[in-house]
Amino acid sequence: MKLLPFEDARARILETVRSMGPEPASETVPLADAVGRTLSAPVRADRDYPPFNRSARDGFACRSEDLRSAPARLRVIGETRAGEPSRFSLGPGETVEIMTGAPGPENADCVVMVEYSKRDGDHVVLESSLAPGRNLVAKGSEGAKGAVVVEPGVRIDYPTVALLASVGAARVEVFRKPRVAVLSTGDEVVELDQDPKDFQIRNSNAHSIAAQIERRGGKAVVLPVAVDELEATRRLILEGLEADMLLLSGGVSMGKYDLVEQVLAELGAEILITAVAIQPGKPLVFGTCRGKPVFGLPGNPISTMVTFEVFARSALDLLAGRAEATLPFTQARLAHDFTHNPALTRFLPARLSGDYAGARVERIHWQGSGDLVSAARANCYLVAERGRDAWSAGDSIDVLPL
Image (cartoon, rainbow, N blue to C red; front, side, top):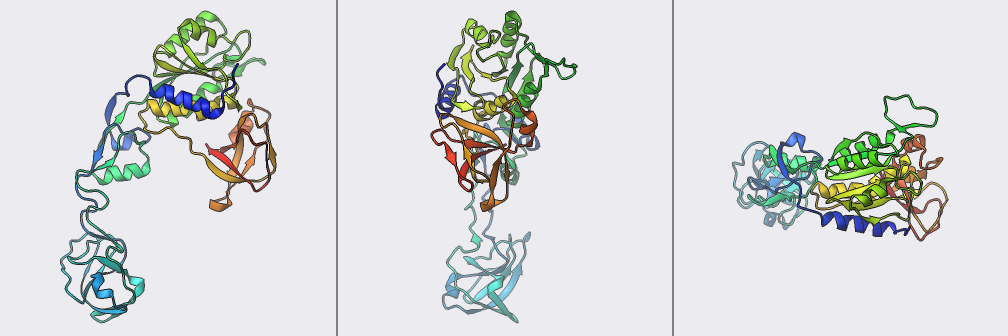
């Protein structure tokens, strides 16, 4: 069993999924239903943005040449509020009082903030000179009419929604949600509505994986539990291969009744990864079968969560039509000394707290990769990189937020 480094495993998975088949089909949905989906067609500006020279500050719209010898005393010829057209054209020595968001008068090329002004009847004294364009956003500078403002492959989040709404995109073309089959295996696994015996566990993995799938914009298809019997496992794997991707939980280790790899081999699967140098989640299987990506995730709950988050999630992003499939690593300062096995990349349940420069991360004490109580207290994974064995309290370390 060859242990692939974390980075190499991710690269192999992403390269394989990128090379598979055509891009997903598209559909048109209301903007309100598009959050979390991936745009499949470019969206263009329906007019210039901004559609006029827009003031970025409350103050006085001026000609910059009138401010060269600041302080400058200018005559106020009127006022323009947001939501009304400009009715003015500036001549030498003239200014218009203007509000944020209002259109600038003709010939104005800057706005002096009200904080730097002193009103004197129908005149105003402006204390500072400004370069052309300061505090006045030029017409069309954010996006000219007909220009692409959102490219295909972008995951629609709330800033994207704001932009799409501003250009009148009440309905948008998005890629169809990938269907991801989830299959848990093992005689010890029972459904949620069953009363487990002392030696059995409820099927929590299928539900946590389904939640991770739905959160990333996929459609989870949860299959019945596959008992440790060859024919039942084969039948359910075949059903799972009707989806766009198959995720199996359990049955990928070295046990006598771990049947997943045997069934996949019989179905002509090409197995590309059998183990990764990470903890938890070392016994990860990845390959392709009948034109579909297949993951065999470890059966321990936290191992399952971690391997989905760092491997399967990115594959799902690509199947959803996203242009990028990245992990949102950040950094925080350790709350305590920490040592680990430098042969592995480790993803350990942790708590991230504090704000901005004061962000700190503290590892949660756990009983191993089956400890769901500890996992539920975590809001991130502390990421201990391969090749380094120790950190001191106060050192920066990688963190993967949940």
